[in-house]
Length: 285
Image (cartoon, rainbow, N blue to C red; front, side):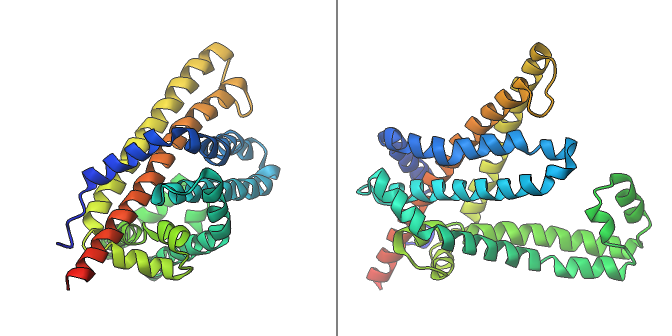
């Protein structure tokens, strides 16, 4: 069997078929572990702007809600990988691997951030105070960049592009880490397993990831604009904590949940397809 024999269209079909056949089991997990955390986080995040003293508490709450969301995705992945798992068994599998999933996520993010160190070095060499970027002062940032020597500007732009491409490629190669973790209980070896299974599939996965990001982003923006705009006019504004803001958060959370569930199912089915491909290739040798 060819290393490129995994058909993404077939994987999508299997993912949607799984969701259609198991909607009753998936929905409670999606609502409790993905929809509620997303809606709550979207509702409380703007409060930090008007109440700086709440920034730390909101950040901590956001992290805890993110952990709950990871649990929900792991549970759905566990069900999608093995049809024999009940919702309760999938939840137990997800809970057992939750800490390791968080550690692996932090590790991957740290590796991606390490890739930014040469960029920081270029900025320092160009005489730019990197602290200005942390201030989020767009005027100051623009002024700083405009004063940068042309040669450094091109070097920074080129490396930034390479970093983005490398990050997307790495995300594709590690995309099967969660299924390998929750189904095969490989611990840190889940990253190596994902790297092995995605050999020859990286470009296809990148295409799917980019399409997912674009479609889900547009859908979320549309929901926020539609609900926020209409309700803002009817209910008298979209200030943090207002009726319009809460309902808009719920709408955005619903859209995000639908895409998150679909993504989890797709990754699980892609893992199964890649695993089967690897087994057939090994068996044919």
